[in-house]
Amino acid sequence: MRDASVPLNWLDGVAIGLVLAGSYLNTWSELQRKWWKQDPTHRGRCYTGGLFGWSMHINYFGDTVLFTGWAMLTQSLFAFSVPAFMAMSFVFFHIPALDAYLAERYGADFDAYAARTRKFVPFLY
Image (cartoon, rainbow, N blue to C red; front, top):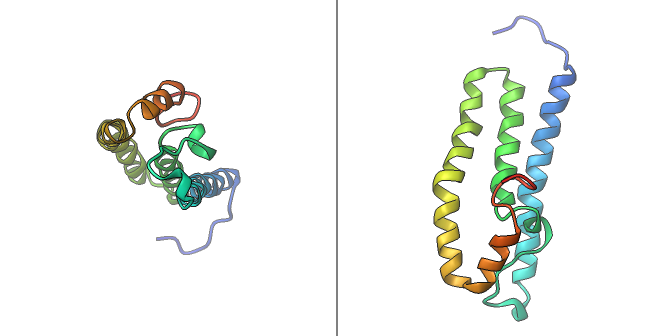
């Protein structure tokens, strides 16, 4: 515990930027999908637009970015285990299971989407 406050520095600014960017990626992508799915003409179709055009699981990526920023703000190496665990659980557990479900539900539409879109990190993976 500190006896005096410590002023924010440039690294704290980067961390706050990551928290805001991650929150944006998660929240805005989910809102885009929600609004799209509310249109009855989209019933039974796979949403591939908006931020989900950058990454199939941009919402998960946003969570990972958000909690990486949070870990930076804490200035605790232990706190980095949270976003690291999240990323690993997304990549090795949640994404494969969700992709299998979506492939079964949407068939060729999902397969075409998966062939042209990164899974987790936009432009990389």
